[in-house]
Image (cartoon, rainbow, N blue to C red; front, side):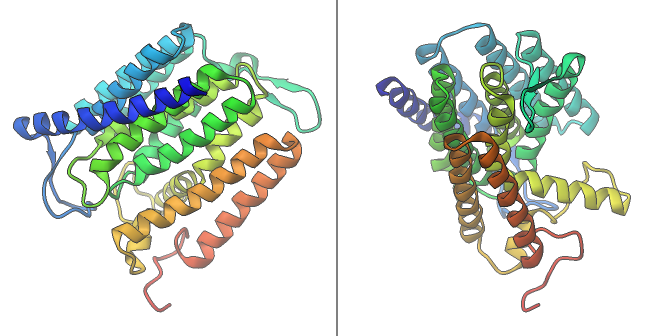
Length: 343
């Protein structure tokens, strides 16, 4: 247990110390996010915070984790997606180029042996995916990169939600005896938390696409590594449930854009965090509300791990359904026009 806690504290400290240095570098180079369009900040804010998150995670894994083939794949794939994200933060890549970079990072992890090869059959036994395991694993990784990137719209939102998700994954890995993944999940949570000190409203630095895509890649990658040695449905259900808010937000926004005939990559102010602001919440209130919901979902995910998997997954489906109904009724997640105050 001391090793896990040490990895967690080390990653917090390293991220905390690296972030100001990266902020100074970004300011010197003029790598800042200027207020425009759907942005909610009012002054230019330096970017590249994701580089510190990745480097802290890398250092914690090298020092405390076992560097096996899968871990090398995760670190190399992470480096690729961070590089793509930095490139995008500086030059604003077109969506196709960014997607190619995401796929390249996912392919690297697959080449190092991480594949979702089977899922648990609710009726008993396993369903082997065969040749479909590679494309499904790539889709899994790319989807999570974009889910976290989509939710990164308010100060501290993506880093806080990712830390909550990584914490739940550490618990699941501990319960299933995967100590390597406990260390990696704790390192990821710590790296996000160390950065969060500077990123919470009012943020003095943004993680940028480099950080958001890396966090999504790491969460999806660690869960896929867990699926190699435990029932895949259980390993994959934890991040899906904990990330319920950003996942549903992404699904709702994409569906709405497709229905309206606009490109999926088009930015707008229809995300859940924008809707919370439109309902009269401050940034603090909106972020803390999503934290609270994510925390409840994390507790549900931990319950799925503790109880019988079939019973737990049934409860997870119910929790997801309740989240959809609550979001639709409140106007926070809906396919119709945004609800105004007092309606």
